[in-house]
Length: 166
Image (cartoon, rainbow, N blue to C red; front, side, top):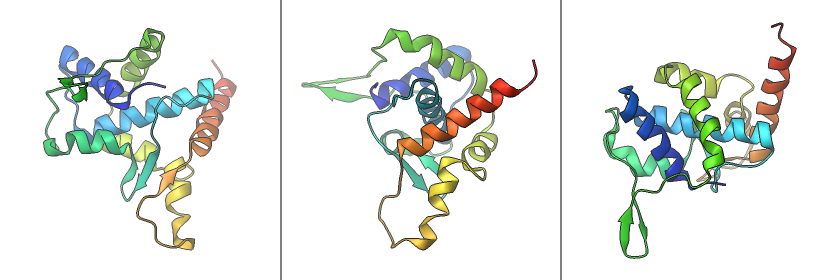
């Protein structure tokens, strides 16, 4: 597992390096998508925190709260957190994740926010399965998307892609 804000900072760094703006919504979706693919490929979570099902899709709460002040404006600064008495920007420590994270950026950075949201909220996605199930449940303050559901979804996506003709 990797520090969630370090993953967010990875995508912010790519944004700043390439000149491709990244907004709060896009960043949240990229972190979620990376987590999903990682679960599907390795059966191991990438994030140390749960993904939440909010009205408009899956949300990684720590990323949302860190950057919500940007609204829909491009994010231009890294997340910071206290390490001891110092306020520092966390970075990805597991260098073996770099090729994977670069690939996520390469594939998804050019999609606009609406397209990414539609990908994450389509019928049959983990968010859709959890969100549409709540009408049968008592009200909850936080609705979590279990990693097992995310893993199963991305494993199915991987299986389907392997069946496609080359």
